[in-house]
Image (cartoon, rainbow, N blue to C red; front, side):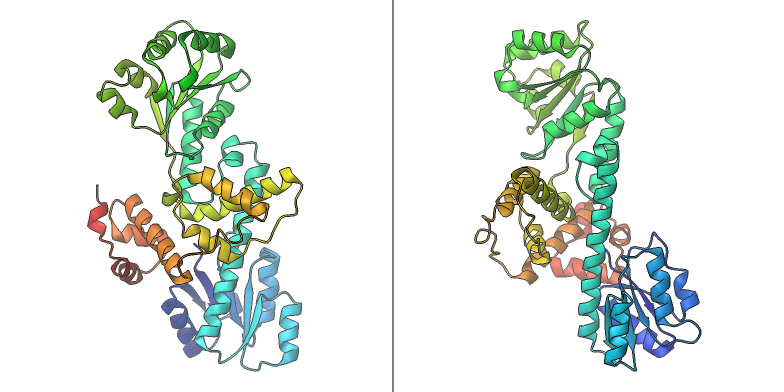
Length: 408
């Protein structure tokens, strides 16, 4: 989540006081005392927002606003002035400032405007990434939605797996889009121009398997819920995979197939054959920041398919969605998005908890995931979330989380 604020004021005492106000709100200020010092922090890679005094020696806040807009026209700049008046406020907004505040301003007013600017910035950057993915010829970028590091890691692993010719076992919880990932692997493979056969394990017979291998003509065969294959079909599949047919098998399952094999319910040799490469799809609870991306994408798709105008998706709606559990993962979000697009969720999505509790649940989820990815190393987890170490420990205490429980 974006928390960076470039704070520009030539008065050292004011600069330090405002910086402390931002830090107390868990924001990450970068302090600068002049236009020259500030511009060194502004580039097309800068992901935060800017808060700048108007009156400064040399080039003033309006000059900094102009410079920022040349770098990024959608970069929020909040202007401050100790000589605030209506004409200056009008001029600020007219020149493209995100907002204007008169100094001295109450800390709560400053934080409220900065938080609003950060939310706007996050949405802009999210939409840019989505557009970039859609314009890309990379199927993983176009079809695996999400802006989190977890999603990017999944895209990279899909690309690596696709470049091999080995069998792949795709695992994930219900609703985690296993068939979609299998199709993406095929699309990125060297045999993408050849057929992609989809089979449901429950209806597969030895004869239908043989037919699928013939029809695939060296392409890919995806068997969904492979653990549901009958014993005779398991033996037939193993024989076909060890025969002369060049088709690649992609198998999907929500089960622990290793445990099924250990219990004698799945053929050991077939499990090890399918498990040449394993690809796990992370559940939404490990990447809650992607929920908003998925929801907006699915709402847009539903409206396009049904020729409906896209409804406004408020920040409160996204916050409610992020605070919910999604045992059905992407499939559940898609269903919710379809109902929202049709105007059928007004009563259903009312939260049973207050906003503070919902946001606390989201924060706890992000802390847990950061600790999990850092192997219980609190320092690395704090760095990954870009929060001061003391703030990170305070949050752990607030949520009753202990880093040592996440060490592997």
